[in-house]
Length: 291
Image (cartoon, rainbow, N blue to C red; front, top):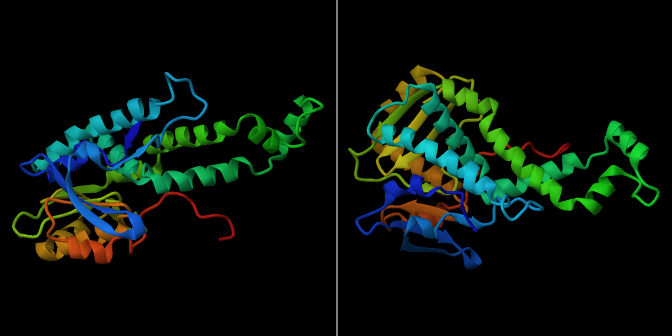
């Protein structure tokens, strides 16, 4: 099943009169090609959130129920901001923060890192668990609980990791912080250069509680969502010449992109080919111990 980790509703503002947008895709031998595509044709991975070991009826629940709900509830907030309104009611703001956080977690590389990290931590020896396992284990069972788990329930590790990801998207300290920050929508239509987006469109500072703490996300070719810890920094950001803001946002969005970049047309093909994948992208997966 196709799991759109770049939601179709999010990409639609980049569509042209042909109901398609310009896709730049890194493929064979890292070559970047470009073509016009419908939103349903791009930004997906097959069975990305499929639950291993679940029943046929429930194995797609994360995509069909959770991700679909996250995206559907975010549409109203996005549409309000496209019209120049800043969502004020808590439910709408919460829906948007949940969507923004999901965009950090839900791509294939981040999901892969999250699963690996979860696997490593779950299989770390735990004296209490081992003691309980030894009390209940059968004579032919492996010596450790970790060995038993990987022998008898290997699919459960990945399934638990995917389900934990959905909980973190809903209940995360960053989610709460983003909801309480000062929100702006910057209109960049006064300049001819247009905003681009990618499979890693979220931009955020390292320290959220600092003066310069912020999130940013292009929500259309001419609209930028901005959330700042300090109102004064938001004022400073918005006072920067619009053309410079667009150039810098595009540089980061393209640099963070790994497989897909999106725009209205082919204007920035040379920039995409030169800059794509050159920057690190935001991640909530903690680094390995002793790394």
